[in-house]
Length: 564
Ligand code: SF4
Image (cartoon, rainbow, N blue to C red; front, top):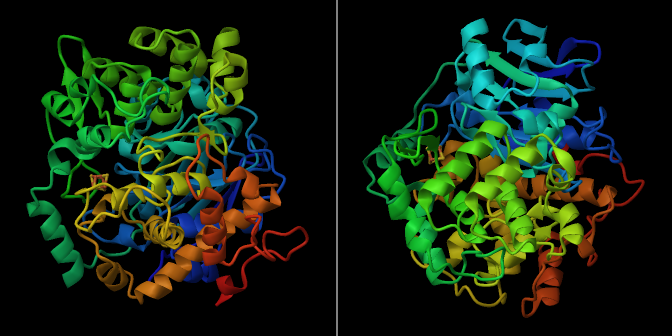
């Protein structure tokens, strides 16, 4: 089995010094990306760490596939304890950073402690330098990009930075790269802000030579020549289908389909697309650079989830307004899903859904924690809902993505058991339940019978992709067999790696007090309790959702299998 290569670079922000150490055993057992970030966090972050305290750590990692020039590999991983969920979480960003990170020669970078002033941290193959950046306080993401270009001759694809939201520890702040790409979910931008790091830069020529094998060539060729609808409409191509099967949350989750879908769906987004967009090396190019000259807005996206969070869920039926919301989220550095859902919660509480300009004003206040309203909305739906008097549409504190589980019941189960909360990419189970989203024959979207072991397997598969690191939208091109060939491993052995990653996340969270009670949904699904039992049994966990041994107080750290 191939894996990422290179040492761990550990950066002590208090002392402003960095050390390297070999982690070959971790790389061998966990491949790279999310697997390596999770194992390092499990071993090195105290179980009782305050997510926004100096004892929390952040891990940036790539995988072995970032040494290839194959499509679907322009992504990388970040891991830490989430200020939104309180659990261990990983987030994954596309764009162009992964190759510049790999160029530094490190398999993983760890940030620990906290600086006493705002810093830029520059990582190169020959070491780390620290730069005081008072001039970047409260700078929006494009201003950080301009600064890096002017001061260091580094383009946006060398940066991982936060906007004002991260500095103000907004719980759904993200880390931005390539200006418009986000390590979006679970609030890791607030963690970077708590460490007083405004921007990280990565630059170097230490990456190993690229070798292309026959499988990689075939996948790349197919990605380049495919006429897949995602190449025109990206993720928004699913909007009308989601609406049709009542899987499109609308009016702050009070409905599951939207009368105004035509104004915000795939065709509407495509009509604003002005060029192709992609991630490094990817010939599939599913990204969506859009603009509307009359409105003076240019952005990348909206993706489908943003169409939900800033469109249907806010009762907004104009794609230009959704684009403006998307652009503002990127500028301020917040996750479009959590931010959009949070603004929808507020507007629902005021009976003011549909006012897109108000939603953007509220987000500006939240990003700076301005006034009582801004401070409240910076906390996200879970913490704001009681005061707003609305239902708490989160799982483990993470706001819901689309692909509504009330319609796609297996996806509903997946939202509930996901270690990082109500996120659709943790298992990507929705793709198995929609008719015609992938080449696979769709499951009956209703009911949970037979689905719990499939959810577990889908989670394991996703964890392998996140460790490799390969994009989830490779699903029609990277079969199980091809994934095995790409990583020089039996597919079943890879699933075992994925299972260990999921189990480590679960055990870490168990040690922080998470159990079955946290695997809960804000709606009923027939057979849900039985499905939970079946899911835990499939994983070999206790009926209360706790990992035997690792997840129990006093257990020794690290899974036995990790050292195999
Ligand atoms: S399929 Fe899309 S999101 Fe995935 S790497 Fe390619 S361009 Fe990026």
